[in-house]
Amino acid sequence: MQNLINAGADPIGWHGTTILCVRRDGHVAMAGDGQVSLGQTIVKGNARKVRRISNGNVLAGFAGATADAFTLLERLESKLERFPNQLERACVELAKDWR
Image 1 (cartoon, one colour):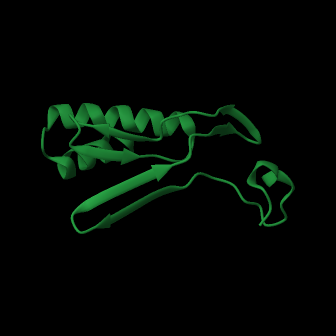
Image 2 (cartoon, helix red, strand yellow; image 1 turned 90 degrees about the vertical axis):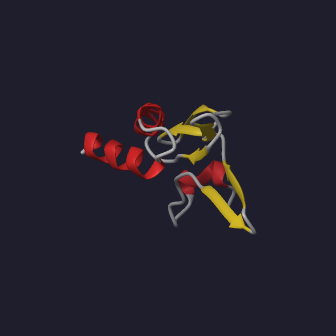
């Protein structure tokens, strides 16, 4: 597989961010790359795309358009403050606001 740094020359067209999450035996592991890019330009190489929010009770990982991802994460945190310990409700309320 071609080095992803040179992804622009790849005929397959590799692009995007991977967030990997594994849950097993009551434990969760989540990981993501730390790269933020704009087109083929790396604008930040050490972003934290996996974060604990809601006093460490929620593990969130994001990928996609950088501005949208950061904004969605901030809004989710706000909804969780408004609806503590109600992750599903916080997500539904966020989805209502976002559309």
